[in-house]
Length: 304
Picture 1 (cartoon, helix red, strand yellow):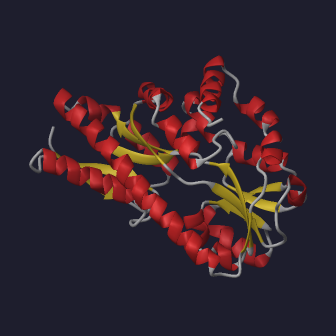
Picture 2 (cartoon, rainbow, N blue to C red):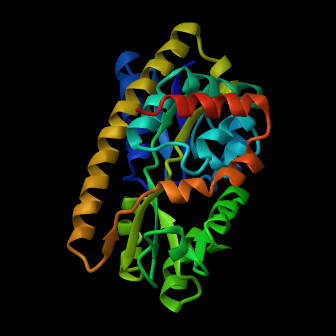
Picture 3 (cartoon, rainbow, N blue to C red):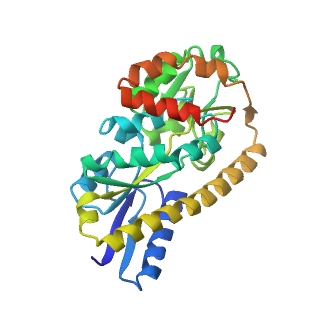
């Protein structure tokens, strides 16, 4: 098989995951003297993540970068990575996804027509709001917090005592400005890049989610590759993770430095009281022995 393979990403053109897949395309092109390359369609050009995931499984798109959230309903083994406070740091998350646990979760997607190739970062997500500093779970009581349309996110925010309000990502800024919601949650680059810091002056470093992102290939496309080309694609995908993390860490540092110069009040807090309220949420979503095993192995990889 040769030619230009297609890849979808909902993130904008300059985003680290997009740049990482473009890096992978150059890697493949160099190794094959231009026989294989990748064209990335960024910014949701080919549809939202749920739609492009389905198209990829049917072979209409070769590669796809998606958050683990839309994979949760398809493949239960992906759900433990999405649990609040299951990872206690970026280093912990990266240790897990680079281990055999990450390999097993990637392999679990094959029966759904997807070949799991790599796991990228999407950063630590923190709560921010326009009302008050959040230092303890009690500070979240009654706050209207935006969440994506996800049962897991809704359960998490409600368990913390706030009121989960699912609204589209593009409506967060206006909803904060108009008081429709009190706050939201996301990573540092999004808080800065979407200008949410202009309308939410309190940022709390809860780090409640470190949900990674999956980079997958259509099994239909994969099966058309020769064995040497399959090995090369895996090699290139692995190399792209290093590049993605380099770009991501730089972007996080830049965002933190910019916010430090703004009027936003950044609060550190003890995560333990927040994490303690997540047990009912974990029990609600982690239901099989296989999922429980993954969670136990993730927790065992925390630093003492």
